[in-house]
Amino acid sequence: MMKFFLAIVMIAMLAQAEEVAPFLHAQYEKSDAVEKKLQDNGFTIVAKYSALPQSTTIVFSDEALQKEGAKKQRAFIAVMKVFVDDKEKQVSVTNPLYYGPAFMQKDYDKNVFQNEAKKLTKTFGKLTPSKDTLDADDLADYHFMMGMPYYEDQIEVATGDNAELLQKVQSYEGGKRVLFAMKLPSGSVLVGYDLSDKVERFPQKIGRANAGLLPWTIKIEGGEATILHPKYYIALSYPKLSMGQFMTISSVPGEIEDDIEAAFK
Image (cartoon, rainbow, N blue to C red; front, side):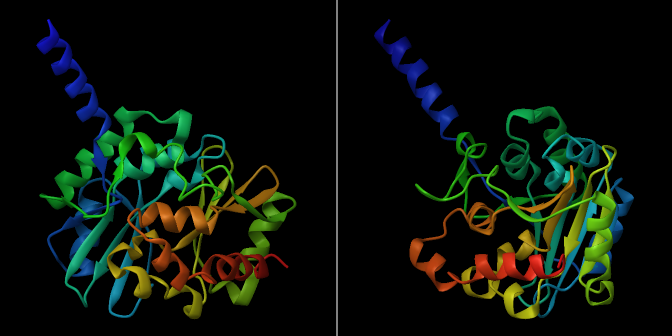
């Protein structure tokens, strides 16, 4: 009886210890080949741009992701990204089983995101999790440490009529900062924003392989333009980031906020 009880405890402990990676690595290919694979497997290409030298980031989506993103406060999950690194010869894909529970919180439907993961496996073949992982049970209520922000601690960068907010950001600097503006079934809009070069290069300091967290996105919903708190989103995307590493980019969270707020002045 005691052995049976111990076995049950061990199974429970192992289940709790499931580790999930924010990024999945695929066999290296040029961005054009990656883009074609995504399209051939039912994904829509939303945008392409270069966040870092010698790289291409492909932002993609599908109907299921947009349906999930249409739920209140969930727009950030409506897109996923592939970071094609021509310098390091690596392809990194955002993991739906990582960002799904983190961004969907109590609305997380595991079946939806397992299906997305299966589509990615069909698209790219073998996918290898990145080394920096997090316990799956910690994703929904993740924060870097005591006193640091959670998912719901989003930053309001502007308020006003939704259409006016969208027009403001799309007209800023002639519209060159807006990489995409995705209108979701709920009427909310997810905007992909190209940060200034000085701000955007921070992955060079803390890990180029995870640059797939970019571009930064802005949610326009209910008369508010909001962004994920940079201290939350950077830490979530770099789960093994040390305090020392975080300090090397200590000015970046504030610079991101200032950069995006300027577009709504």
